[in-house]
Image 1: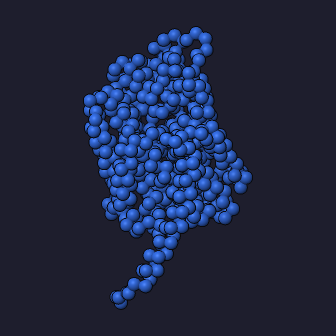
Image 2: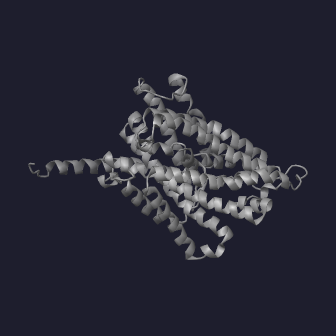
Image 3: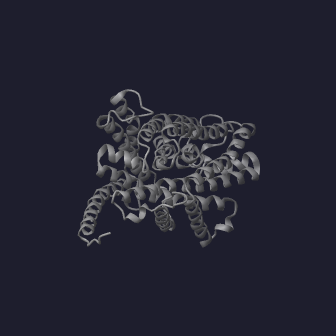
Length: 434
């Protein structure tokens, strides 16, 4: 569970390059240390309480529905699945990009697109084998992913190039932009909750998995950046894929190649783990009548919701060639709002079900349940204020986000009407006596 959560949240230190470029080494280390305290730790505590108190398949959808009603439960799922369009289109592109770092001819032309589709097929088959196969595979991928960075941390301090004299001027200085990227790199702690019905001893396991994953992610971010900071490299030289260049500089072509392979493994592990999480949502929604019942079908052998897995895979594969750029503000907006709904459900359940057994309980009573959500709310507001003018094409990203949010309420009304119509038709259909 720790390994699967690691891929849902991080997938390696990849993505930190822009923070170094925007803020420099010292500020990056400070951001990577403070962000989990204000963003990740409160979320992990919230997930630990709700996942151990209500260890049901569907996770955060069930929590919000139970605490705040069916409409808000629907919005929780809608925000997550809408955000997955941008999230899941990213990983096949990352897979192809890192493969191209050491084998450009392999991904040239349409070959890169075919390879990306192949990665989606691989992760779909992996998910069809069930959560046990996903968990075991995630452990192996984690080890293979992190080993090159362990070597980097050990070797880098011996390759110091001499610290630059004076203060380095950052060409793209942007402190709040760096914080936004860090928030994105520390998102996903609640995703493991959707498979609670398939987890052994969830009331005992979730808390340990959450805090173990927080520690692993934070350490795997901090140590490589700290090691490279001692080399004296100009932070302005960091670009996307910069870890491969650093690996070549520190350990030659072999370490550069190993880090590129780690990038490939990170993309596979993240896509596979997130697929495991997201595909449980249509299955549970079908049981509640918001989707056709066929989505609730599971494999007799593995228990995996194979119809939901297959349909989601086809949908994400259709989005992949569109080449969505990593839209941080939309990702942070949609995912951040879904997380805030979970914090609201935490407080609502303290009021509505005070006697609910909570194997792990955030201290402070009702006030503690409210206060624990304040730091994430503050960080989300700051991120939205900072990036309120960003565009996709000619359209403001916040406008797109608002339209996505409004569409969720419209779809809830439509799906409820269709569900009632289907139920009425079933009641009026002739029945034969047994």
